[in-house]
Image (cartoon, rainbow, N blue to C red; front, top):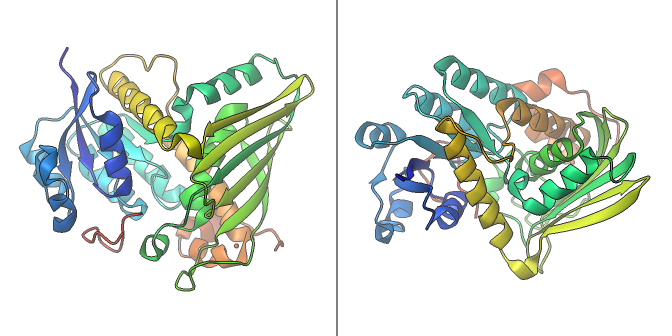
Length: 344
């Protein structure tokens, strides 16, 4: 069987993580990389891959079956437009833009070009979380009162990245908002949020180091989301469900396991994308769509508007200015991408 040929856009921290995850797959292979930073491209010189300075250069010179966009978030919409113009299926890293308006525009661009667009919310490809979702859907836990989602990173990203990330609700929170919707099958109808005043990097503006969020869901369940940038033991993520018929906890990202769970999920996600892009089935896993990306970003915009330190970052996005009513509550440099820096 011929492997699905995937072009990678962006070789920063997340792009390199995808490279590690996909390496050795017999189903899908990174066939080329587009990366505008000469220094970053030089770091991949030993990877044995065709390296290109721009997306059009890669698409003009290489035979590809699809494209994975792992560039900075504020470049997602433009890059989706460039790839869609070539008629290639797209897997875009979350959040698919920095606002719900941008995510909606990206989805419309892909639809107009007739190409599949999936957004890389890799939690959907974690077997333990899928089992939690199945148990909720089957009613095994009874009526669900509360679902909690925790994500605490080992340390904050570089200040230059944070300036263009949209803040913690967009950079980190969208993972939890999508996970909460996917696990419960309910939409997020309202949020309240608070943030600690402590911030470790005085150069950073428009961001906080932690945020705690209460979400009301359309089916009557409550969600609690905890986000933080300081967990010295290592990156962690967990989910809990409290129902009338039982409770469960799922520690799916454990510092003791390093990045293993994420890499395995990223591989399942890439192989599922290849299957769908080729007209097949993703094997029961449900990838996130453009509409899912819009919903996650709408929740993030509400959170950003509710936290004073984040409200400035939110106000810089037109969608947030137009559509969000704030709650009265206590918010590497690789170069090359316009007005953006890679994380890590």
